[in-house]
Length: 608
Ligand code: G6P
Image (cartoon, rainbow, N blue to C red; front, side, top):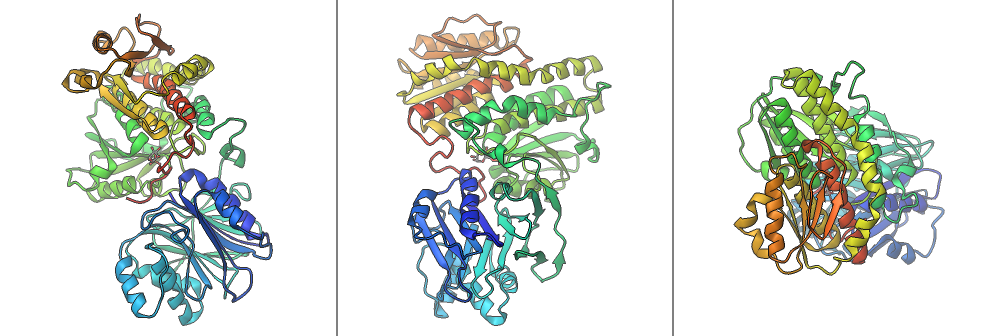
């Protein structure tokens, strides 16, 4: 949601800012804008347009090469529709100060009333515009933009990343963050501020983490960080471990397809170093946590929530610890009973999802130990957790999560095996057997991807369906939920996942002649195999067109069978989900949808 870029240095700011915004497009947006300081103390050059970045670019009449500092924004509308006027930046009445914002200013109505009484004129319907007016008043007091930002932040309620520029001090870009993401990119004689590192990855791999309620002031020569009282802070520096190529399409038609095909590597990278030569499971990340755990609670949103639902089965079976999985957005408003013996695991690709972050804080307040599973180094959720296990999926650009999900599931498997080893709830030989199966997963995913063409052709035949149902039991049930979520996100079709056992309690009424039903079958040795086969008969008898996903142990008499390699039942979602991702991808392509940036969706949901 909302991408933010700030640049100051000797190079033309416009091209640096636009490049950054392009790299942040994946976050999801509906309008874009820039503000550039072209001349000291003159009004800033401001351009903003509803729609995609191309609209903004074609509205620009110059490359403004004399502007060496600027800020840019991609907006995902909350307060006020996605119009040119509501797009950011928002400017002060003298046109010398501009602000961009990600988040929500909750007290904007009262601020606006007050500012209007003081003579400020508003032009947009946004909550952000009040900040521009407030900042210009504060700046006038002592001509110090960072001091003005500190003072304004104290007056704001809500969550925000803010960037501001003023033409009286044109080399400075000032930022602030509370509950929303902001990182610093430290270049050679040039510096960047951005929502995430992908915005500046082609210029520098050096980044600085910013904490809660901190204000940062960057010039081409330096970066200074303070708290809201003006006290100096030394931010934590880190190196970005991937390069710009990893965040480019590399010959694939869409990022999503590329990311689906990167899954074998993403799983291998996440497993790297987990299995010692002596057969031991390595999980240093939780060594410092107390293993006196009597309950695990997994909190997440979206696809990451499905990772939790899938991981629960293995964690309980291997580590013999009760596991609950809850949507972070529900948990954060409950008054649950937790103790120091509860291990709360938050799962988040971005590490910035607002509901997951707030749920984490809620869990900490209630006394639980916290571990995060995250794909983004230096992001807020891992920084605030007692322990962190990083997945190594690399940058995930497509809005619909694919490779991050598979790495989240294997990360939960690593935790489950580690706990089983430490608590001795699995024998050494069982651990070895599971370990071998886990290590075989990348090749098995590869095998699925090598034989995916017939599935793509078959999917196109269902392009005009109005509804697709997904059926599974045991770990196949959350896999079915994920299949349905992917199809909704990408194909904009009605899709629902059901537990096979619930079929007769309602969902079967949805079946009409020709309704596609995707059934996820367990290995034939599973106690639920025959139950799923009966479910298939029941939907077939009512006219459903069944597409079965199964390994070679199950004999099937349905129009379409997608074969996946054999694995342990608990690990099977890591294989069965791959064809579901391809199905959703191909359906979106066939229906002419924007695969990488589906309508109304954002990659990282940083507001409630
Ligand atoms: C958004 C994305 C999903 C993602 C979810 C959670 O809805 O579109 O793909 O699963 O947020 O994101 P997180 O970064 O916390 O994993």
